[in-house]
Image 1 (cartoon, one colour):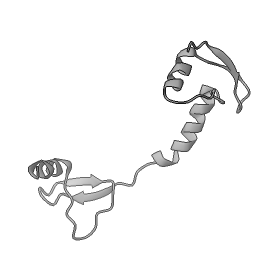
Image 2: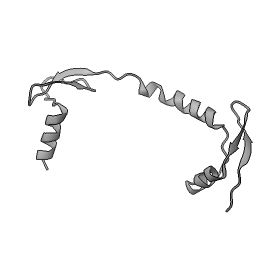
Image 3: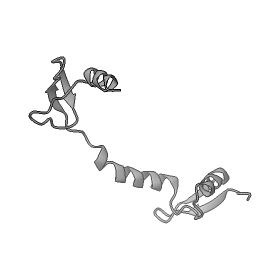
Image 4: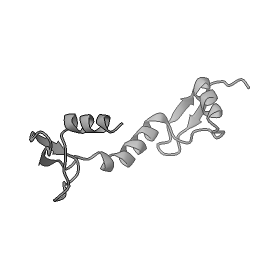
Length: 98
């Protein structure tokens, strides 16, 4: 099936945008058979709104490696009684198990 560039109107902002033939062909191969309803800039803005809360600043916890005693940082809160390791020691332990 041959595709050609088509002009569409964005449902969100009302601007006219082009749906390129190559993009249409790619979407058909992926199983999408409907024309896009939003222009690329509105789609990008919607994606940014969806992903922003998840990409907030992460809580970092200080810890001391149970093997070498070096100060390290963790993305999770360490629990009492459970050893934590720096990345070097963790890699060494993981490799020695296999």
